[in-house]
Amino acid sequence: MTTRLPAALAPWAAGLAALTPELAVALGPLLRRLDALIGESEPAADDRGTPDGHGGLTRSGRPDQLLPSEWLLADEAPDEFLRRLAEGELLHLAPEFRAPTVRGRIVALADTGPTQAGAGRLVQLAALLVLHRRAAARGTELVVGILGDPPGEWLTGDLPELLPAWLAARRHADPTPEDVRRARQGLDAADRAWVLTSPRLADRLASRRRVLASESSGWGAAGAVRVAVHLAGTRVELPLPATQIAVRALRGAEFRRAAPALLPLPVPAGTTGRALPAFTTEARTLLLRGARAATLLAVNVPVGPQHAVPLQVRRHQLHGPVVAAGRTGRRLIALQVRGDLLVPYVSGRPLGEGGEYTAEAGALGLDRARLEDLLSGPVRPVLREGDDLLCPLAGRWWRIGRNGNARDDGPLAPGTEERGFQRFRERRLSGHPLLPEAERARHVVHGGATQGWSEDGRNWVLRCGQGDPLEISFRENADVVGLVHDGEQPALITCTRSGRLVRSIRADGTRTLSRFSGGSAPPAVHPTLPLLAAEPRPGRIVVGDANTGRVHHHLGSEQ
Image 1 (cartoon, rainbow, N blue to C red):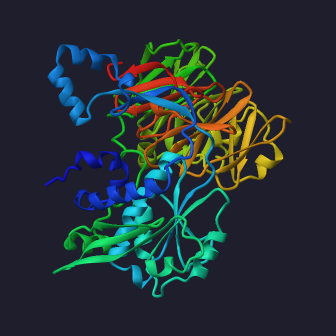
Image 2 (image 1 turned 120 degrees about the horizontal axis):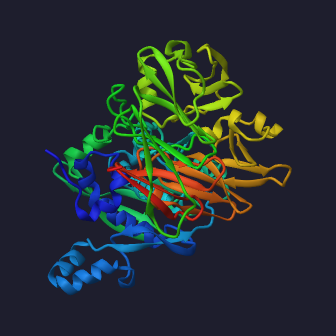
């Protein structure tokens, strides 16, 4: 039997996905009222930012934001219009804002001592869901600290990893005001810390700001049924979930495990492929597989128009699964697997005599498992260097000569293959020698003439040539997937690991690229142009401007 979320909990669907539907529904009343209480105490975001056009569609908004088709419905079928209005189904244009860069995290300092066992922990669970949603609204992340633990030891990650770690962090003694003071001292200046505890500890704190205290206040035959929550001088009584499911929740039995893979499971070679787009070279050519792994689609992306138009696609039917491809000048080169061989395919001027550049797949580290893994992601790049072909496979660069001899040409840079193939992290593909600071850094990203480096993946320094360094940072759990330029201003393109929210982060602000968000994989970013391509939903690929977030072209499943 499947339990559906009620309409009132629809805005919470992303966070509640970490719980079973039964617990999500049971926790709903406590969750919603706690959200309202926290919202009265402090708004979710300080500033929505500067209005910047529209960023998609939403089911809420002002009457002037309704789509013209909805007004037409009001004229032609007023009863249906009223029904959709009552059910919250009318579509509105969603306003887009250029938001100021948010540097601070949302921090939950949790009391996991004996006094908070039972009802207090259920309130904390609901509070973590509320704070996680507020963190997402601010473009940052939620981290959890356990009171009494050494400062700086944080529980991080998405909710499926975070909630079980918080639940397991039970302590045998209640924390003290000194524990709270030390935890607050370990925070960054821009962080917002919430203390989740009991009234007993809250009454002893010097500052009660953002202190959420709870205690059981009503009892039934099977245990606590109501809880009193104190915040900012306000006391409210809220309902608790039924005892049976509450006990299962406190034992961790109602948490859903995190999905182990970022991409769907690989498919058998030679049958179906993944239509994930990729810019593998500096050409304006978007490459992706078709419905079958042996089909390569090539799209030459024209200069963006002012409105979305379909793309013209050229279909190349190969004899085996495509693992890599790239356009050099007017020549398109692809590498396909045929039996135990890696065989080139060329559209345009031939590379040489038939049979040249054919290598044994095993010599390049390709076995069946690695081949299936390659086919679950975008095509890898193929480069031409002198008379050789270069291709990154199985953690190494491989140089294939005319005679088919494959030579190991060195390892890929650290992090390049963490999630597919991160072209912007591969140091060999930078068009300029790396700066000494970038050479020594743990994380590197490059785009055009600009290079960026970071030690933690979130606080970045960018420099173009010998220009002044520029600092850009973010707090949410996201990966940098590209670096583009808006005039002379560089911007990091990031993609959150949960929800696949794509953002453009500059020194002066952050923009959410909602039209490119929500896909099963991060977007493709052009190495030298502000071009972005993504598959926000299966069967539809959009291409557009990485700075404005506007879609210029689209590609449907029928193509």
